[in-house]
Image (cartoon, rainbow, N blue to C red; front, side, top):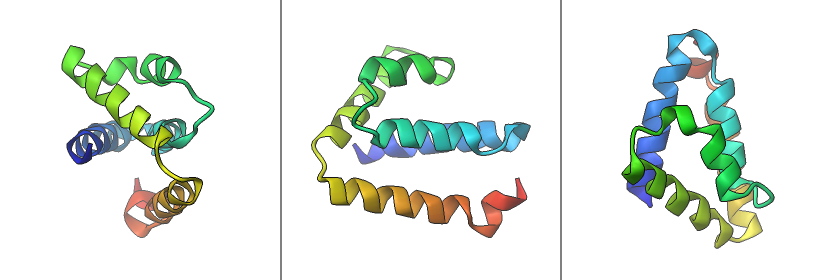
Length: 93
């Protein structure tokens, strides 16, 4: 699961760096952590970033992993992401 997270979080910042801002990355992370968003909704949203079936399976595995986390863990994960997005580096781009 850690490898999947690394893959997802390395592809999207490159997209953000290309000039669109971090909005897409923030949306994907919030959709991944949100238990009310289904796996198919997430897959539909990130379809442009999925080069093949293996990546799609990895995204499904990542999303399903969040279903098994406690609410407290998900909240702390989202807090960490907020700190990263509000950091100096992300604010520059």
